[in-house]
Length: 288
Image (cartoon, one colour):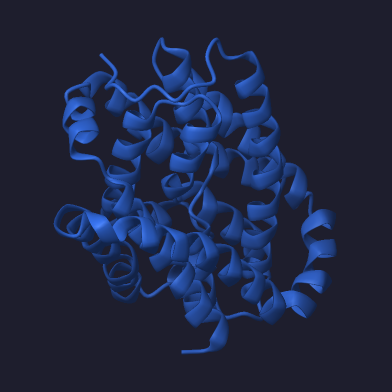
């Protein structure tokens, strides 16, 4: 395993293990009863955003490499991030917990199927399906379940593990940027020149709008849905890009540029949510 792929794998495991550690069974049980809200949020993340991605990739005439990185992010929900957003920006923790569990598990099935439908034909043909599925199971599905098991059987260890994860995740991003730095600097011009950055900004904003519109009537649910829909799964996309397409293509660079743009835009949106929402406090009780 090359260094970039190894770091990407650690990043994804860190995200999904952390999501599993956060699972609160009471919140989960209550929110699973709200089938209408969950179905709308699932629809927005797994159907609407990928469709928006395809339309934008065509509208901006993105080339094969940039379109591939762009669409990988569009089809991969990144909900582990949203737990932090829920706590800090007035979101509903119960919905965030449910999304953090369901989306990585659903992605194991949906992402390979969606990838085969939306990626450019030359890149889709070079994506080994069995390896892709195995990657999802090993680095995304299993860590979520392990995190849930640890939280259930060893709750006293959760706080310590969360501290390690909070340090490890940004460290993996930094290391990946160091490994890919020269290539990333060279490719940023290509992403910008192809209007890739504008396409990414558009899809992040439209993803937030989609999450807001489908997040139900409550402000707190809408905040969680909006941020969770905009934040795509950088760990999964970086691992797929480095393992299936290599570090010498512009696919990885596009994924990292997407990460930076979504981070900036969601931070701005989160600050606005926090300022305008009626109450900054996280609503801990389950939504009804």
